[in-house]
Length: 67
Image (cartoon, rainbow, N blue to C red; front, side):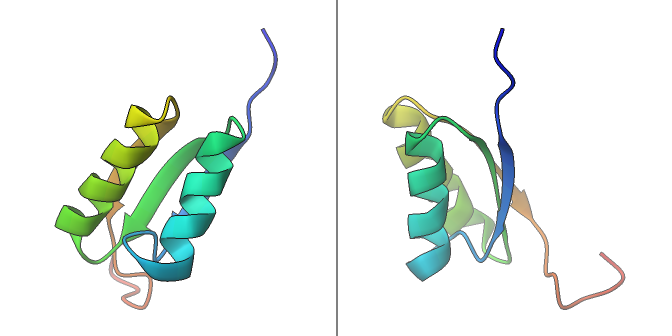
C-alpha cells in the first residue's frame, strides 16, 4: 500500500482553508479540517467525503494555547 499524505488544515470551515482542504482531498490526502465552527467543518468534511476523499472535522481554536 502506498503511503498517503496526511494534511491538517486550519481555518478549513470556509474560504481559502476550505478550498485548500478540498484540493488536498481531491489529490488523495487524508485531511483533518480544523477550526472554531464545528458545523462548518463538518459540512466541508462531508463534501470532501462525498467527492471520494477522506476527511474528518476537529474543533480547535489555534489562537487558544489551552487547546
